Length: 487
Image (cartoon, rainbow, N blue to C red; front, side, top):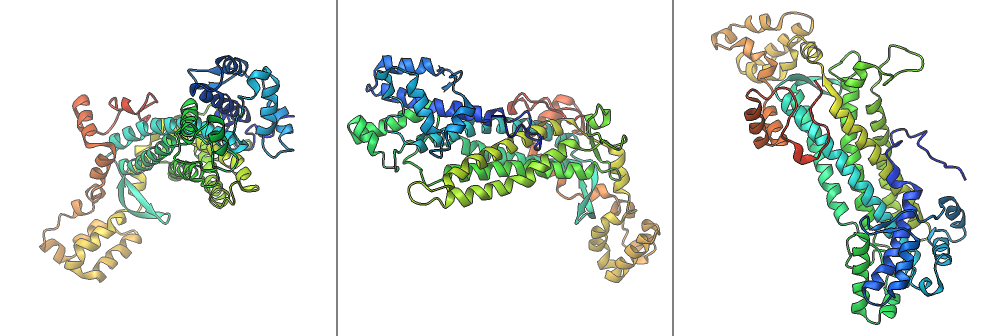
């Protein structure tokens, strides 16, 4: 059997999905089976010799709390899974064939297929989520540095695609940062609570009570199993209470949403006619963003890939809710099975999108000349809101509308404002009134709040100047990823 999906049609995931491949899932299935045997041994029920043989045969690594090099074949197992509808049935048969008779009864003892599949899903999800969180943390470092270094760089804000009022490059970056930080914290909280599953055939754990001899011992086995695989011990089986899946799916979508917003803005800001940002790879060429037909093109390839993931992810989460939240009976017919590829694809998208974002924001280069050019494109009309607030009491709403209309036709806005006697008599400083930098409101404070006021003070102390440029050396607490905004 050849691989169906190598990422050819989903390049955003290519090279970033090794933690969620079928091989990784098979490792997790084997890990769950071996961990259950180990949990029985910890209770003093399974013989040391039997569990030692199981561990050795299937490549248990204590430091990894997992199995590698077990020699089971993914393609063969997939083919054998069709008859029973899940891979655990043939897996257990294959594993039992490889160990001595005395050890066989300690494989899958009292468990049902769902115990192993759900636990394996959570193991794969935990490993993938850790990588997503790390990528978000790396993006945070660069975004924090960008927001600080461009804190007071005034730019044109756009609403409904049109120039609106002044903002700052730093505030835009701070908005990206807030979303990434929030998504990172939420996903990390969900990751920490990912539970093992061990409930038996219908979630009553009756088989484990029977095998261990008491309800108390059965609870110890469930907790011990969770400890062996490094997952949370749930208060009860979650066979059809699928909050681990839906909450994880929602957190993953929030992460992809956060980076999708960055990609959307960067794609817009890097348009030829706007040109306020670029990436180092765009500037250097090297085949990045190339067109097959137009040699001059330097497309924002990373933004395109990230957006492709962001456009797909919400529908996958919706599928999880449709299947998981509405699971019937004590195991549904098909809904449970629909979760597996859906959750895996959502994990893939999150892995790829966040990894590309970590690189994108590290390479992001602000083009000050383009920012300034666009800021002045409407010849002062960007501060029309301020003119309305300040001048209406002096010259009336009609007077302000007249200034705006004449300026839109090309008249000098400063001259128009000064032409009103009431403005002159009031002593209005017209130059200050029309200065976009004096109409950014709380933008600077919002940036400081996002990056941390203490961090701003530290930066000023370390660099001995205003907080406008360069990389920030004080963010190593967020991880060892690249920092700086690449100016």
